[in-house]
Image (cartoon, rainbow, N blue to C red; front, side, top):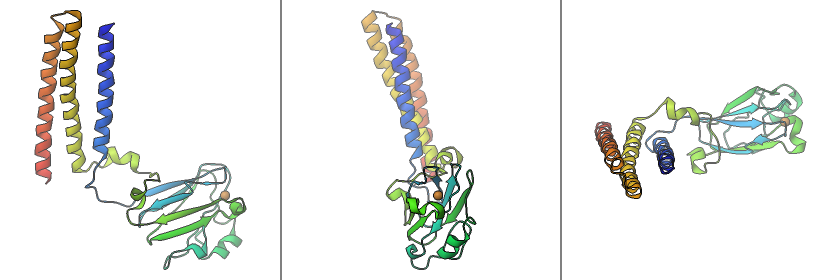
Length: 234
Ligand SMILES: [Cu+2]
């Protein structure tokens, strides 16, 4: 009974520490911003989701139709920042052309339309067949993009962790593992002492302590590697 709760405690603390490590590894203030692609879903609920999206100059928005009904992505001509060219699915030259040209520019279910925004400012847009039921959206382009308000999702965020780990993240990962092992060793020493105290079992304490020493050594080694990696990186 007591042993079982001890194991559960260990698994629980491991889970907490590995969560901490992935958070540590995800944070990398040194990575330079690279152009990102942001997804806006178009649904049979006749909405753009998210309705307002904030991106950085050079980023691409990809409108993906996840429903069955067709939609367009059509810029309001009088809601273009100074110097920004007209844009719309179907590559029309003007809002009037896009309105009269529909269903040219229609994006059927399962398909998408992408546009890259280089000029800062706010871009209002609408869906030609569903404008009357308020299927409208806005793209805000500003330096720093979504990082300034954290409101939008990016297509690359899930792959960036495993895909292109910058040098700093390797160090952070080593640090996280080191912290986990060191913390685990401290935890084991504490838990084994408590365990043998409660049961009066002379065997458990020393055994667990040996494991603890092993983890502490391993943790220290990883922290040493971290220091070397950091030194080489700087
Ligand atoms: Cu629509």
